[in-house]
Length: 276
Image 1 (cartoon, one colour):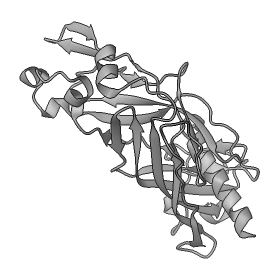
Image 2 (spheres, rainbow, N blue to C red; image 1 turned 45 degrees about the horizontal axis):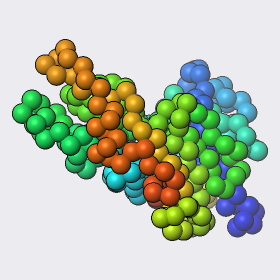
Image 3 (cartoon, rainbow, N blue to C red; image 1 turned 180 degrees about the vertical axis):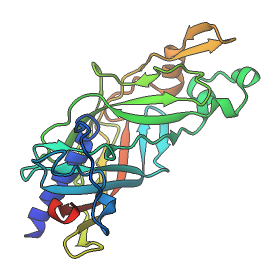
Image 4 (cartoon, rainbow, N blue to C red; image 1 turned 135 degrees about the vertical axis):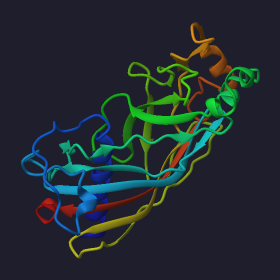
């Protein structure tokens, strides 16, 4: 297998991993991976998805996601796992696979998001901690493509539910459309081109495992819509829509050429026959 073909296979893997956001296999009689391959537990067994031939596990270890004037660091690793067929067109995940939701802390919290400093008097600083959780908002594009197309929405959550349960940036009808690449972007101004990093390919913990390390996927050409569904509830029963406050304080909606994401990614691939 040539280096270029291996890299193409990696692109298939990461695209399939992205598909885990929206295409999960139905639960079936689960099997446990063999010793030494437990990291591939998210890959479905033959009984769960017969078409799967390759198992993978991808981990986003760091980076950032900037929309408008809010820049959220990726501080907690995001795990994507599952399996795909030989062509990379079909994807499935076991009940242990797919995308594991991870809360990333948003600097400035709810006060930074809304500009409402008086909220401290009602809720206290701990209740005003803000988290961003990325969710799928549609199907990804062709898995062999580079850049990789992915529509998403960002769920804004607080421990106390200060913003309600439906505060999002992006939606199924107006998603944030990412196009991730390890190459060089071509954004509209004022952004300038940025370049990702192809992975370093090496042998994994076992000879049959292909490890692709230190890839950096980037995109700074996407637009971000305004917030929707953000509701501040005072005294437990007075709901107030604050979409406008979130937008004005966060610089949303923000046009293409003013946003950016970088995602540091490691991945492992193996033929499923070694796993089960």
